[in-house]
Length: 566
Ligand code: PEP
Ligand code: MG
Image 1 (tube, rainbow, N blue to C red):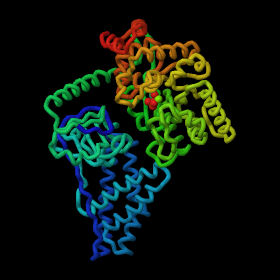
Image 2 (image 1 turned 30 degrees about the vertical axis):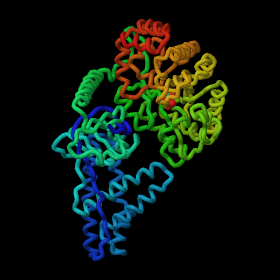
Image 3 (image 1 turned 180 degrees about the vertical axis):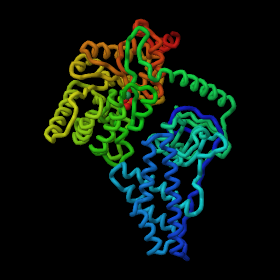
Image 4 (image 1 turned 30 degrees about the horizontal axis):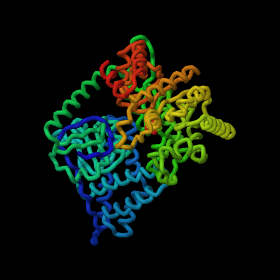
C-alpha cells in the first residue's frame, strides 16, 4: 500500500497503464540547413496550433469555458511573437536546429516565469513547458501520448499529468489516476476533481513500483493505492464501490431538495473549501453556501505573502460563483501545524498553544490589513461573512472588529466600495470562548464551531498525536455539552450558529446537532447530500429527544453506541 495525497475522492479498481515517458533528448546538431529548419518549425507550429485548437474544443464541450481557457492561453503563447520570433532568430542567427532552438528559447521563458513574484504568472511556466513539449514532439514526428483513444479501461500511473493530458483522457476508459508528484492544488488534481475521477497524487515513486497490467486499487478518499492486492481486499473494495455508487445515485435526487426535517425545521448545509476551485464541488453536491473558506491555502506553497489584489481576486471569484449564497471566509489561520515558508515563527514548545491565527494577525497588522481590505473590497460581489479563527477572549474579538472598522474607514477615504452588510463572526474552537459564549454572542453576528480544535483543547489531546488518538472523539460528552451551551447562548442573543469542523459531516451525529438547534452545518462537499438525507428523514421533535438522551450519557463509547443503534 502506498500513501499519497487524496486528490479526488472515490474508488477505482483496474489494471495499470504506466506512462513513463522518457525525456526526449534534444541535441544541438552541427550541420544545419537554416531554410529547412525554418520550414520544419513553421509546420510544427501549425500542427501544434491545430492540436491545441482541437483540445480547446473538446474541453469546452466536456468541461466548459473556465477549463478551456488553459488552451486559449496555450494558443496565445503559440501566437506570441516574442516566443516565435525568438525561436526563429535562434535558427537564423545562431544556426541552431529547430528543436534545439525551441528548447533554448522555451527554457529561457520558463526561467523568467518561474522567477516572477506573481503567483499566476509563475504557474504559467507549466503551460510554457507544455507547449514547448508539443512543439518538439511535432518537430521530431512523435505523437504526444494520447490517452484519448484507449482500447480498454485503465488506471493511469504517471510521474505527473499536464493539464492537456488530463483533459485529453478518455474519461470512459480512465477510471482513476495515480502520480508521483503533485499536490491537491496541482492542475491534474483540480482537473480530476472537476471530472469526478478518483485520484491520488504525490505518491513519490509509484511509476517505479508499478508495471503495465498490474492490478491497482485507488482509494481517493484516504489517498491510498494498493498494488496487486489480494482477492479478498479487491472484494472488500468492490463492495464499497458498489455501495458508494448506489448511495450516490440515490442521493442525486436530493440535489435540489430543501434541507428540512419531516416536521418543518430548516437548516443550511454548506461546504468547506480551501481554494476558489473547490466552489464547483460544493455547488455540484447541492451546497447551500460556503461555511468555511480556509484562506491559509492561498498563503501556503508560496514564496511570499499573497498581495491584497491577489486575495481580492480569489474572494471575488468565490462570491461571484456562489451567486449570493452565504460565504463565510475565515481570516488567516496559520501556526500550529500550518506553516508559511516566508513567515518565520520562533520554534515553540507547544505550537498549537502558541503564536497562531488571530494572535498573529492582531500583532502583524500589515498581514491582517491586506486580507481585511481584500475581503471588504470583494464584499460587494456576493453575500460575504467574515470569520476570525482562534478567538480566546472578548478583547481579541473587540480588537479584530475595531480593525475591520478601521479598514472600512480607510477604504471610504479612498472612495473604494464595500458592502455595509458584512456579518462578522468567530470560530468557537477554544474552550474559553465556548465558556464565555454568552458574552461573546452579544458582540458577534454568528458563531461557527470548530470541533477539530475544540476537541483537542477540551480533552487536551493533540489532534496530530497517534499515541493519544483514542481520546480524540467527536462523541466526547464534555465536547457535546460545550456545543450545546454555545448554541443556546447564541440563540439567546438571536444569533445563528454553524459548525465547520469535521464533526458537522458525521451522519451519526447529525440528529444530535440538529436537536441541539444547530443552524448551519459546513462540511466537505462529498458529505452534503448524505447529511441532507438524514435531516429530511427525521422529525426535529425526535432529534431533540435524541439530543437530550445523549446529554445524559457519560462516555463517548456509550454515546456512539446509542447513536449507532437508532
Ligand atoms: C476546526 O478547528 O474545527 C476547523 C474547522 O479549523 P481547522 O481544521 O482549519 O483548524
Ligand atoms: Mg481550527
